Image (cartoon, rainbow, N blue to C red):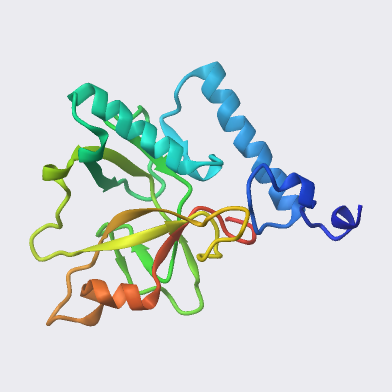
Length: 212
């Protein structure tokens, strides 16, 4: 009752999934998670998966690699990821032919440039940016994605919630997504991977407050 009065998630409820959200936003998030699973069962596979709505996102990504492994008749440990990014606010009309389209990620420490499909300097005082729909495509290691000529890729860590070190109940780090870096002019610092590593740029599956 004290938790309900203070708008906090009761300790006994946290077995479902860990979150930094207050109770009101946690309940809205829970309903959204249930709706995704219900629609998946009743209406079939969605065109885009809200990956932040899975209690174990790595179980979902592993399943995608297992599916590709069976099709190619290759060991799963020979597969890695290739990522492609849709335009912001794009409506995906059909499921991905390979892998899956996912959404629900937020970028911290950098800004997503929707015109050039790459990360760039964030605006002053703005902490988070919504990421576009991303295609997670399993590929054999020898076909690992490389940046275009003159463009680097940043190995961006993805965390389940803003506490990157994790908590006793649940680890926070999930996987790494390769994000394109805006080509620099005269070797500007932002065109270098180390620049974004020092900035602590990362993807988050959920925020501590309301997600607009």
